[in-house]
Amino acid sequence: MTKVAIVYHSGYGHTAKLAEAVAEGVTRGGAEVSLLKADDLTKPDEGPWDQLNEADAIIFGAPTYMGSASATFKQFQDATSKVWMSGGWTDKLAAGFTNSGSVSGDKLATLQQFAILAAQHNMLWVTPAVPSGFNMKEHTWNEAENRGGFFMGVGAHSPVDTSPEEAPVAAELETGRKLGERVAKAATRWVKGA
Image (cartoon, rainbow, N blue to C red):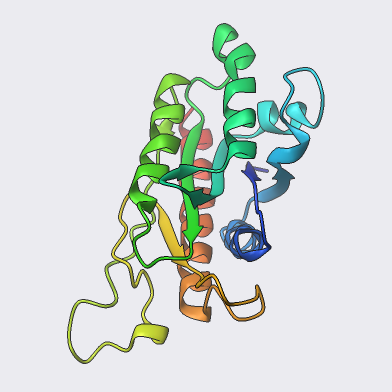
């Protein structure tokens, strides 16, 4: 069975909620999923690195703090240098998601950070393929999938005064599910083609 790993950090629970939705999408796409906390992967020889190394695809997720991924995710990112040295993730598929308190919040910078991490590991980037759902006047903000119009990955919005029970909203969680499903299906095709 195709294996997809999701490695994420969540400071307040909102990004964890999005990570769980992405994991549901991976399952919906027919792949086995491992949901891993970046907090457990900050040192190269400690934590569940084997699940990342065995995965056919890795989806990166973190909140956007001050224009980039959180410091905990960056610790994980830096710890991947040992894998980089051996080319261990070459030809795996990759994707990403992020969340912040602002509608934009410079989330694109975080998604680009993830894409560059994937490129350095010789991975292949998968986009969500969800059209912008809030670009016409008849669209409703809370019901629009990909309401922020992010195409490199999923960019969700959780106002700073909301709990994880309130945000991200259902439509953004579905956008995350669609990303997970697409990665799972793409990884299955990729593995079969190998």
